[in-house]
Length: 368
Image 1 (cartoon, rainbow, N blue to C red):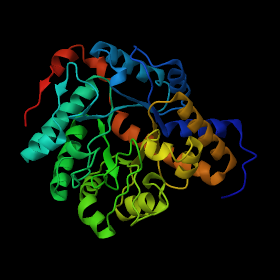
Image 2: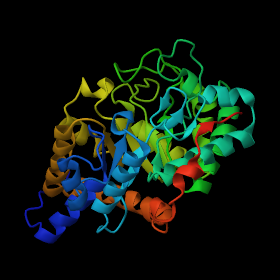
Image 3: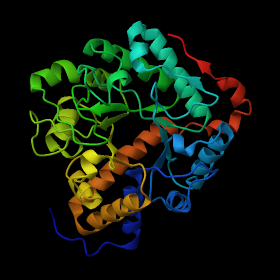
Image 4: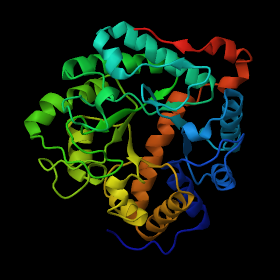
């Protein structure tokens, strides 16, 4: 690392703080019409780049629309909009139920083998999300369902055949792109062949490089070829590639393989940094330190206010003290801002033209 930046002026510190904020997407407790005070202040000041909502944040559709409108308005003075994200996959991972389409599991969708129906369902999901004020969906799952005892993927995957998952995943991207919601493919380098749930412990993917290339990676390669804008890293150990670093902190997995060999130049997100796979091993400061040597752009912290505030402070501290760290933070912020401008900058707020949004959403069941 290079020398300390003792001569950093106030303007560049402000630039650094805003850049560090773009790297953070946070969750919070509560189902009111606006976020809690720490989140409100951080959105106004540019210390976070967006939020992710869960079922715990949803009381009703009217309340949800008011909450999302508040989030957008709090960040309205910044040069790019905030991410307003959700995990609306379908099946057992569907955060919003009232008044929207009840989505079958992706396993059910995949079993039909109908690529057009997959694209239509994706467009339906994204259209509803956009009408409610979301602009980012952490879906599709691009993992291949190859392990019968996998406790966390299973029915969330589109199938067991890599080529089919690649085709169906591409159709899913088309539907979201058409409706104007950012999709995020997950969980690279592939969470399908594990026996452990990264929410609770660190999974180990016992695959050779040849197996990863033949089974786990075709859906990600196809998505990259289709210009997927965001990919999420799984909290996984892959000894065949790197027996020292968890995937999101691995220069081999993230930079050498995902960035260089697979050619992905979009936004790379972590999974929730409060999941036990990483949180039981590292403090948030240690996770920030491990993220800066690699090109990890977006850090998800889905529950604790204290943790995302400490993450922000650590990013700024490292950026002020070390020029290489500062450059990395600015690089990630540029990628995030580019995505927001390219994908979201031209769009009006969803509710500005949707007085009849409840009727248009309709609700119901999607039949494949």
